[in-house]
Length: 257
Image (cartoon, rainbow, N blue to C red; front, side):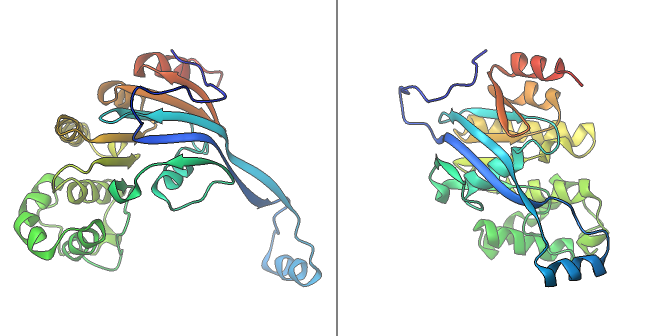
């Protein structure tokens, strides 16, 4: 198992994703107001106090073309923050990420979904955001619905869907077309029943066979072990280990609770 390094060594070929000494800091309230009245009084008196919070702290690793990289870690460890930086939704406080964002497709639970629209309407909305044409979605609509296992629910508003239903529909839309060159999945494979997870993993393997580079965040070590070719453990913003999925998941599972 590789240990975290302070720098990045030379690669035989340029990586698809290069994360180089990335630090992300936010400001959070030091002592939150306990009521609206207290919040207003503090605002008028300028009494807000903030402290810096490092969501990511000097994280460096690279993802090679065609690699399936898994990222594991507990809640609040900075995994989703890192994905947002890679996708371009956030700019790091320090460090850099090198990736061709025109080739990146990010899939998170309900990304681009409007809860007040029906499942059918959201297929076309979400598909348009990804870059599919209406004609493409017309041709693939039935297959999307069947893959998501949502026959009979497509005229329901998405706000009535469970998180698993939203995840299945989002995954089905995102993977309906040709495999994207770089696919980023945020906790998508951890939702749904065992049968659907197996279908999703099979689809990911098809995309891998097509040459896609895949980055997967999951709370489930079993998903990382079964799908990924390499893995990283991020805990409280710091990179703890990088290596084979089995070795990284093993040290993650053996961490002090």
